[in-house]
Every structure is written in structure tokens, then in C-alpha cells.
Image (cartoon, rainbow, N blue to C red):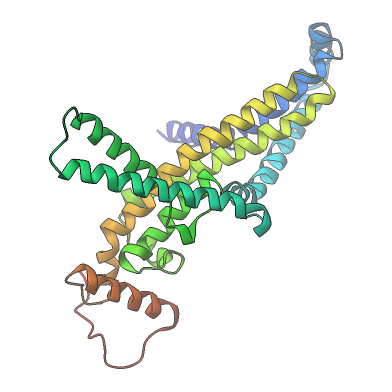
Length: 309
């Protein structure tokens, strides 16, 4: 029984280690292949294998330890770069560089809003002759989905990924006057475990997509050894930046917004705050709760309720 537990724990540790340094091992394996392609190819690899077979066990272990240390070190470096690269992909650039792109996104937001109003009128009014209502409903849903991925014009970012995340971050304020950066740490602590697990997994997926972009772009540095490293690195970078990262960002944004929609009342209850009774009242409540969490409040209002069970 003890042996079985030990094997399970060891297997779990190895699995986590490989998951963590797996991208680094793939990266350096690709670099080794790029080097081999211009330094003897398959014959050189066989010669190196024969030389390694003649090494003493301690030397082999030292080489393996050196490889693993290099993989861990490069993984740590990419991890440090992930957050600033994510901000770069979101569009936190100097103002002159982002202004024109933001203006284009604002115009797109207005065009989508106008189109949505037009489609809403077609849905509500009696259809004209020849109008395909099914197509109208499909266009309305498609337009609404695109508009949902954009924040209000005053919050607009220059990139698609940045607007996905900014929309999720600002919508709780627009709907409930809850400031996301202020309220989120408190809301996180009262979320049920399944919700925290899903949100954590979604954020990890987004970070991995950004890390993949970093690894892919770094792969271009092997072009000096082999020209095929350039198209492979650029193609993988484009895939990570244009497809994988936005897909993960959309998942994370949906869960972040849903956490506020479904669990904000739990936060009110844990703060012993009176629950709002209508949307207008909730905006006043949200603004007061945000202020309360930032600097506290004075006076007799609100009257705290009984502690939540």
C-alpha cells in the first residue's frame, strides 16, 4: 500500500514537472534539430549517441541535470515575460501608437450599434415583403455577439484581445457600479470552489497561450542555424497571437463576467450589506460597496444585516 502511494505521488510530481518544462524541452529540441541540420544531420546525431553511450553513468546524469536545469531556467524566464507580453498584446502602447487603432475600433462599435438597432426594428415591426426573418434573427445574434466583445467607446483598446478583456473588466461597473480591480479580490474569496477552479484554469490557459507566443517568437533566433526555423517560428507566433490567445481570452472574459453576474449578492451578504431591490438601487449599492472596500464609510448608513450563513 505504501509503495503504491509512493508511486502515485512520484508519478504526479513527474507529470507536473513535465507539464511545466514541456514547452522548454520542445523548444530546445527544435533548436538542436536546427543545429544538426547544418552540422552533419543524422550522421552527427548517431555519432553523438555513440559518444554518449561510452560516458560513465555520473557524466550522463550530469548532462541530464544540466539539460533539466536549462529547461527550468528558460521556463522561468518565459514565465516572467508572460505578463508584460500579455499587456503588450492587450494594447497598452504609447498613446500616439494606439490612437488610430482605437478610433477604428470606436467606429466599428458605432457601426455595430447602428446595425443592431436596425435589426431590432426589423424584428419588432411587421416584416416587409420578402424579408427573411430567420436571416434577420441570425444577423442580430451575430451582431450582438461581436458587440459583446467590445467595451464602451471610452474603454476601447487597440487590439481584439485587449477589448475582450477590457469588456469583461468594465461591464460589472457599467451594470452594477462595481469597480472590478477593487472588488475582485474580495469576490474571489467568496466564490464557490468549482467557479474558482474554472476561472483559474481559464486564466492558466490564457497565460499558456501567451507563453506559446513567446516560445514561438524565440524559435526564430535559430534561423542562423537553419532557415526553416524562420517560417515555423513566425507561423506558430501568428497562430498563438491571432487564434489561441483570443480564444482563451474569450473563455476567461466570459467566466469573469459571469462571476459578477451570479455571485455578487454573495459578496453583499458576506459584507452584511442590504441587498438591492431593483437595478437603479443596485447601481447605488455597487458604488457604495466599492467605496466601502477602498476607504470605508462613515455614518449610520447602511444598516448592516445579519451575517450570511
